[in-house]
Length: 306
Image (cartoon, rainbow, N blue to C red; front, side, top):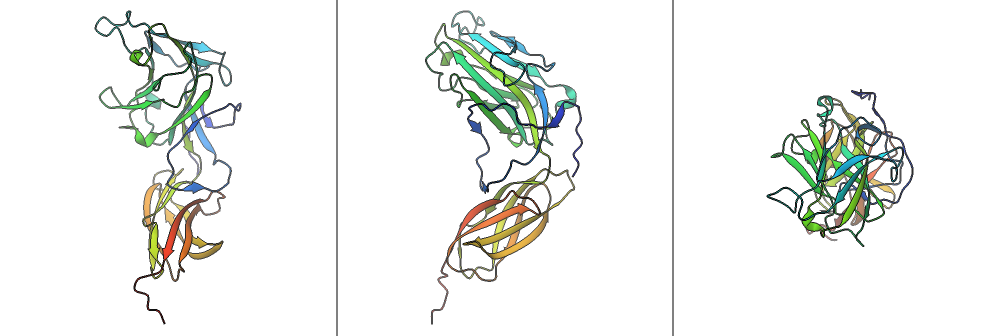
């Protein structure tokens, strides 16, 4: 499959410097077997070395190399002041936003919004909700809000937000980071280094989930419905996916189906399954990445004993 990229800045992702992190991902319905991360395409939206323009309010936002993962990051500096904010709201919402260029506002063909944040503060520890992410999709009334509660003082934290969670992924007009001053004490100082704000998508057919519709089946069941989530394909394309029910390293049942991107339900035919613990395995044909999900087989109540 060949995915064309709209701009030269949108390039395959590469590994950069390794830092301590907390990785926020989709809660998987299946577990990936040990395998390399599939290749991903990357489109930078903003960092300290790009031409992105940020608009701060009650805060300062500027490129800074101090805690950048490479080059420069955008440093959001805030002196918490409970008296000098907007007249109607003196305890306000210091913030900075960047508008998304018109030719990058369609995120519907991307899988994730990805970014890193490093935090320093005059406090001994950050409050429970130290910072928030807002994506206008496309406007204030239709926005995605994500509290970044995982942030820790003196650490890089990695966030990966599924684009599918946005109200309208095809119309994303701005990204904003903001704090609520009510979460801080008057006089607190806090700095956030925001780096590698980018869109990511799988560059080849990739399974995201395998979900058996039943976690427990009878031994005399002749089918098992399985939901497969697939990405890394253009609309109208299909990929062959191998699906199997396995027990103790042996295949109990298997099938290969051609699937489009998105979530598709399939039927796995079963001839015979003995009681015990099995797992459903799924992989794109020829790929090393395998997803699994457990299924328990129990004795049928209708089985006639000799």
